[in-house]
Image: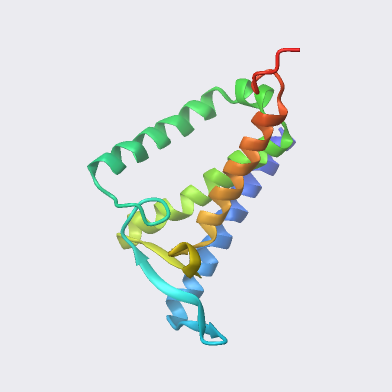
Length: 153
């Protein structure tokens, strides 16, 4: 039971870190430059993930994601037996980050992005970073798990 409380705490912390950072950007709504380089730049993302267009097809994928998260909730014992601690933290980071972006989409109609990555032609937020780190942690877990990495020795 204590473990579940810790996981819920991580989800809430990642959600509120994302919300707090976005509220600061909305409050000040000012770009921040370092050596004439826009590091913080307010952007309204009407796309889905990393600026990909949001359309009916995207909505269906979002619905599948939500249904998938519900399935994970109900099959958590199976998930917890497959994922190690690193993978579980990755999963809760994805949930917390997704919750932050879904909140924006529902209440603003767009996602607030502000971290400028011009070499990648992206403007992202903390939720995107949490989702990427979470996916990397789950990927590492899968690669480390010999049973699921194709090594049956």
